[in-house]
Amino acid sequence: MSIASIAEQPAEQPAGRQSGNRLLSRLSRHRMFVAGAVLLGAMLVAALLADVIAALPPDRMQFRLRFHPPGALAWLGTDNYGRDVCSRVLHGARLSLLIATTVAAATAAAGTAIGLLAGYFRRIDGLLMRVMDALMAFPAVLLAIAVAAALGPSIGSAIIALSIVYTPRTVRVVRASVLVIRELDYVQAAVVCGAGHVRIICKHILPNSLTSLIVQTSFVFAYAILAEAILSFLGVGPPPPIPTWGNMIAEGKDFMHEAPWIALFPGLAILVTAMAANFIGDGLRDALDPRTPIEPARG
Amino acid sequence: MVAFIGRRIAGAIPTLLLMSFIAFGIVRLIPGDPAAVIAGPTATPAEVERVRSRLGLDQPFHQQLVAWYGNALRGDLGNSILLGRSVVRAIGERLPVTLSLAALAMAWTALFGIAAGVMASVRALSWVDQTVLAVCLLGVSLPNFGLALLLIEFFGVDLGWLPTGGYVAFSENPIGWARSLILPSIALALPQIAIVARTTRASMLEVLRQDYIRTARAKGLSRAVVIGRHALKNAMVAVLTVLGVSMAILISGSVVIESVFSLPGLGRLLATSILTRDYPVIQGGLLLVAAGLVALNLAIDLVYMAVDPRLRP
Image (cartoon, rainbow over all chains, first blue to last red; front, side):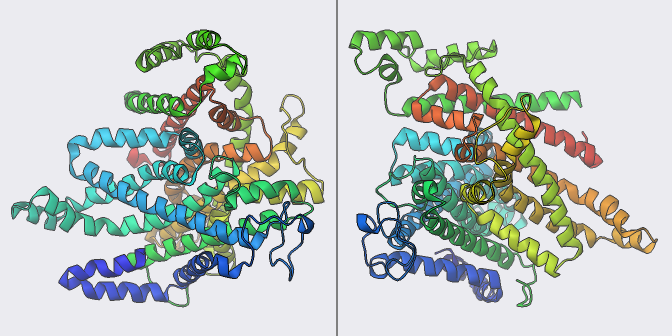
């Protein structure tokens, strides 16, 4: 989603089209970005095709097949209830990707709105940033647990909790770039031409602060994957019958010695997804910064 | 200098007030009635009401808040609902565990993070550099509770070298203390080591390109002096920022790690208190943690000034 939106965004400005193409070409030469996009794309396809790839539903218990090691019968083994680990990992992927995507989108939207307001209207800057500072003064995990506990364990509350935790960080990033952009000559020129606040913010400031927002959002996605797993692991994420990577690890941790695959595969899924998101974030950062040389020789 | 510190502390007060207000509000949103829980399942409604008024929960929100601020200023954070002791005492018992864990993790972070970053930067693009970068990528993408489980399984169960969990106080047995903290502190530190190593590497690469480094080399200074005294010292400003952020993240991350290793620390106390709705402990603990983080940020600013004379007021 983010790749398409950067590619389209400059096209609205006549001179920007070329830079959009250049960005795509820079991205396609960035080996880490390509690897990340492929990994995340594969994970997404696997999640969408979960019912096709895995023969069994994720909650089908087969008591005669408990703790079955990975093999032809069950590709990634079965867990303590005889449920197919492969099926659970894939269905868990749907949930993790859904939660992380929603959190990234919500954080980007709220962070942009608050960051633009704080950076542009200096009178409310102090108040808004104090609130953000206060939210950031909480240890992230504790704030997320508190919000998730307040709302009751569910998918929705995990999304709200993580969005509240990560929004202040995005606000800071957006506000910082707005503070720089609003002082630039072309913004001043727009003011002189009599452009209204809304026009200046939407036409001149927002498009130019997107760079840092996009990079930040891809890292929020990676954090959200890890944080959702932590919430589920601690028992305040979506409740147990729902397969999430975090609660699969929590259930599997008691069998680490006899049946390590129960916890290992969801752990690997988290690792791969978070790494792919980090690759994409690093790639976007390098590609969006014209000073960074991108040669195929350097990863 | 004193004026600067005073201004910074004054500036932190609105943040702390807002933060405690949020903490106060959130815990009251958690569904369930602590008075009913304490009174027990067989209590009559009248008994529940008595417990409620004893805890002050029958008063309006703003009165509870004002009373709590008043007591907090006198150093009294109230009594835990479930632990049968004062909040200050409950936190005091748990704090050494979390501080030991965070301090040790911080030591690993600074030591390995900076060392790996410097090694990678002086041999940029070599296999050393590539290895450090690859390990860093693993480090930031690995869920640290997953790493913790692997460490327990390998070093605790398979090899039997280190305990699989639990805590030994330093005063009881220093060696046992160190043994009980090695695995948790490594699991906690790894993501931060990765971030610090990346920052050190980037910052060193920037500095090593500067003219004065070439000058230092040209006048025949040894490699160690050029890297250690000239380059690293200037690269440290960016690294210090990240170390400060790391410290805050380590405190936050201790919640999970303490749960995995069954360490009786502050993070686990707060997480349990949130789930059991022990209001006074949550409020007091969060206030203390936030105040600690504010103090930490102030300390970092002071270190900045010591390192970089341009930042002195």
